[in-house]
Length: 279
Image (cartoon, rainbow, N blue to C red; front, side, top):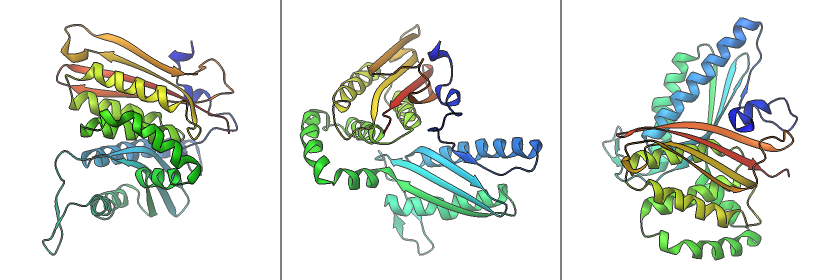
């Protein structure tokens, strides 16, 4: 019965669990209001970032009496078309760093000021691409990483395959990365409607190699996708499992997320379970 429950909610009472939302409420009514606001803020940030080719890994919100601290971890996708914004000096900016600053200063922060009143908003972002490059730059991991990358050379000819492999590398080195994997699969199912089976083959092959590496922080991954693959007349459910994912054991640190991909052939339901090593 472990696959029929939300593994993350089931383990929130354990000592090793992490809460993405922290706030101090005065009464029960205020607690429900904070919970509703957190869900709306996370959905808004996910929508805005995804529109500009950024996938949100996690969004942590902390409320004080006067402040609201928000930490966003995101993955930077390579856009098929350059996103162009005009500044006050009429200069064209296509750099992703400038786009990120534009999102924070001109879109997200003003909107949150209107939604969260009478609070000072402190918003910070972490680029997982740069964080991964710094962590891999350590000499112990660099040689192993270079040897592993050589195994994927034939997949680097197409940009979306290279981007997907890099995303799986990053998600295997970060905790609570089930949301990032589910959103990436949802994005690819919608973007490439005739490559669904090949996408599953690429994910399976990548995780089969990643789980053998020493610097990876996960023990296993389970992915369940239900939908009309490659435009078939009937929906099918496909399950991909690599490594160890003990859903019945509460002592294991398992992160869970479900996502929905809206395509021209109907919707795809995506469920991802990630078992993290107990460090």
